Image (cartoon, rainbow, N blue to C red):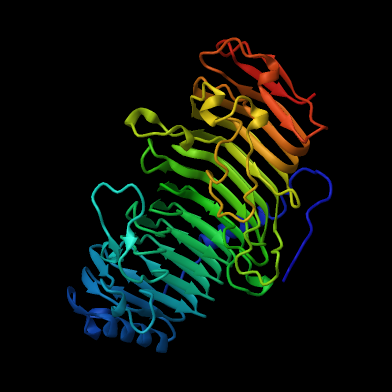
Length: 522
């Protein structure tokens, strides 16, 4: 296993690899598997454009013919085609014409021989190009109910994922639409040089595990211009099964995407139990909860709970609407897949998040409960701290509305015990009530908060900032307002425990209504 050590003293987060990311993005944006020869029309091989009969044999024959010719374009003319497992091979582009529709199986047993709709293994120069529509028939795999409040329960086994590129290189997915996927929609796995561009994924918001794009131990990946609305994570990045260091997820750029979900818009690190996820750039994206009165878990989730290392992540220019926690950073020790006992925690360090605008859960539509709305969360472990984290130029609007400590079952903050929950599944609500409405940070080193605005919509008696077992803290121009309360004292703006080196000041902010303060370290 490839390992590395976190810095032993606070330092500015590394930006190594960012230029490489931009270069990677530029190179990948031009990658393609195009061919000048006449296309291999699947109708010529016996495909049925009516959708009444399986067209899998005809499509596979067209792909095999293109491969035998050294590569080519396999054309899906306008029509509807039933498929149950297609293998994409070297130097082949699947070109879906306008008004071409692909219907996957309605039954798990109809997938033959493997449980994927489209798959390439150890192939190079392969592509799927739209604007065709691929329907995964997801509603046939769940027990769909009216007015759901949580995920549907599965009614049969499901293919995972619907489309996979396994150990491939030079992959392009451009302009296609995926709807109603029964599980993960699209996944590059142990692949290199992957471009996913202008892809639309529209899944049921209550379809279980219907991730949009899952990048698993892949490198040099560009995801751009995509629109994803799904019931689980819109985009997830991880290292899963044991693999050589050359395949660890790295050099990944996500830009200009619209993401909508009740879960996580971007999640990095869950299930990463080997190696390093590094050099990730997430920029110029917009995220939105599927319902603003329920909210999505988080717009930005950076996690390591199974032993993996997450480092050198840059997040910039992100708009998040309806998040329960706008930013969630969690180093845990669940240890799934590890063979040692107790498991060994991973590391999270060198993270920059800047120019982010977020709003919280809205009670306007009814149904909101107070504990659905959290602030920014940064959680390490007593034995393994997160380090070198910068949050800069961030505007946070939260619902707030904690007017009495008794609402949290305590009479003062010193009585509120936030559990460690080291082995728990990472979730923004895994710790219950938190003692702050703005930023809660514990077991951390080298934390910088610069130019933050933390604005609850309702009176909230909790401090804006709480630090537990934190050192190397720099706070500059953090503005917190307290609507409906002009009697707060500076000492009530922040709360520290187990952090003897931290000193904070609070000064009145003349540009806000009474109750607004500017927080800083000397």
